[in-house]
Length: 56
Image 1: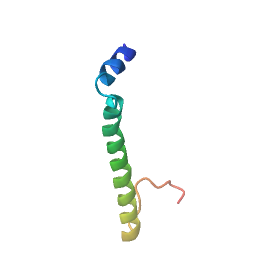
Image 2: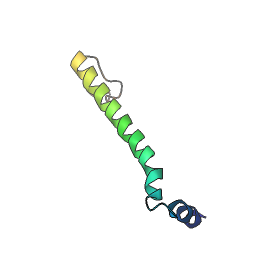
Image 3: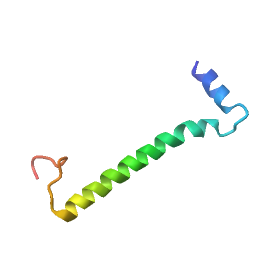
Image 4: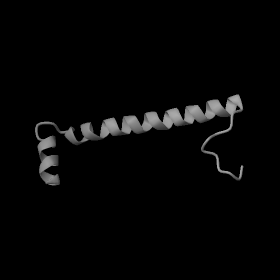
């Protein structure tokens, strides 16, 4: 079933397999970027991070 799906997606569109991965990568990059920007903003503001370990 997986082979048939991939073959159907790539027929007539050489980059068909990339179209399915691009949105996931974009969402992942956006999430990481937002998390990084949020942590930097909290650090600059001096507020404690919710994800910091209890030891710190």
